[in-house]
Every structure is written in C-alpha cells, then in structure tokens.
Amino acid sequence: MSTNEMNINHMHQIHHELDTWGRALNYIQQENIHLKTRLAQIIKNGIDDRLLEQVEYFQSQFLNKDAIIALLRQDIAKELKLNGEMADEQNQLKHEKLRRDMELMENEFNRLKFDFNSYLTESL
Image (cartoon, rainbow, N blue to C red):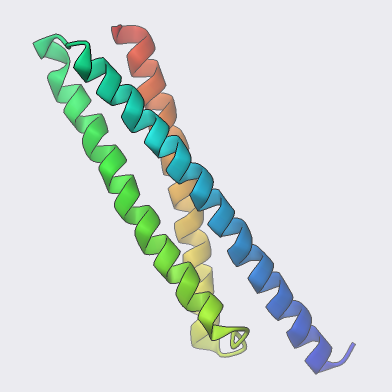
C-alpha cells in the first residue's frame, strides 16, 4: 500500500470516528434533555426541602453537560474542516485529545445518569 493510500485510509478513519462522535453527542444530548425534563416534573410536583440540595446538584450537572456537548461539537466541526490534514503531528495530538475528551464525556454522562436514576429510586 502506498503512502498516499495509507493517508487516504487514515483520513477516512478520522472522518468516520468524528461522525461516530457526533452521533454519540446527539444521543447524550437527547438523554440529557430527557433527564432535565424528568427533573422538572419532580420539581413541579413539589420536593421536600431536604432534597433541594441534591436536585440543584443534578440540575447544575445537566446544564454543565450541555455546555460540554457544545464545546465538543465545536471541536469536532473544527476537525472536520481540516478535511484530512491530520498528517501534521499537532493535529494528530488534537485528535487524540478529542478522543480522550469524548471518552471522558461518555463515561461521566453515564455515571451521572446512573446516579440520577439511583437518587430518584431511593428518594421518591
């Protein structure tokens, strides 16, 4: 395989990975909307004052995830605009950082969702 073919394959893989991350962020965003809606329903029905601190914590975390999703989307869009110029070492390092950031986001969000659902099961 020639160097040019390897670069093309590498660019296709990068594009595929970025597309996958975009879909993952769409899913996380939809789940986050669902969790915020559930939280709003609970607040609407009234909550005990002793639960207020935990409810505020979850609300803050959900809003934080919205901000992180927006930043990750921007990073993905920037990388897509590079359109395969990933051969440069600096761009490869940026891609690796984005990969770690996506993994962290997915893990943190799954933990948050689990904690929220556990909290609801135990508190309501």
